[in-house]
Each structure stands twice: as structure tokens, then as C-alpha cells.
Image (spheres, rainbow, N blue to C red):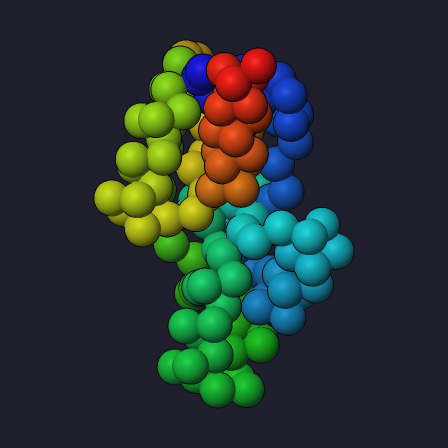
Length: 135
């Protein structure tokens, strides 16, 4: 199974925030969508980084209550590990394990954003795959 199959099943909608959105706003967006991370994109739609629950917690640990007002640009992870729709499920799981990340942006062949997969998406796909094989 590859990432393209997972995206066709879950969809390719990606929740994004702007680089000036503060931690409080981002936390509300994550809670509203029941997700653990959002891509940080500029006005042109270019991906600048990703901000996760983990990033917000680290920011709170470093800055205390002032962290709520800090912008995404100050908290986000800039180094993104990405996959393509052709990346296999096993390769993506291995990348997440090796790099200790929970979300992978999916980059299409044309270089555009094709979606975002989480560790939950991949584990669900792996379980579905195992159940299908067992049948």
C-alpha cells in the first residue's frame, strides 16, 4: 500500500495556519479539527513549516504563559520530512520512527502539496491491510 491510497481514502484536505497566528489561536484550530498539527503557510500558500501540539508544549515550557501570544513562525518546526503519493506505507512508518515525527506532508510530483498524513492514518491503514490479508 502507498500513501496515495491512504490519501484517496482520507482525503487531501490540509488544515493550515499563518506564520503570524499565535499559539492560542493555533491550539483552538487544532482542537476544533481534532488534529495534532497544522502546516504553516504564507499568503501564497507556500509551506513554511509545521506546528504541532509538541511544538506548543515546548514553547509553553520555555516561555510560560507568554507562549500563548507567540506566532507560529517562532514555534514551528522548519525542517519538514516529506513523502510522495508513491511512498510505501512501510517507508513512511520507518521515516516517522527514525525522525521521531507524527506528521508527514505529502508532496505531489509537480512539487505541490498533495495532503498530510499522520501516524494515526498510517497505523489505521496498516491494521486495515492486516485485516484484509487475514480474510
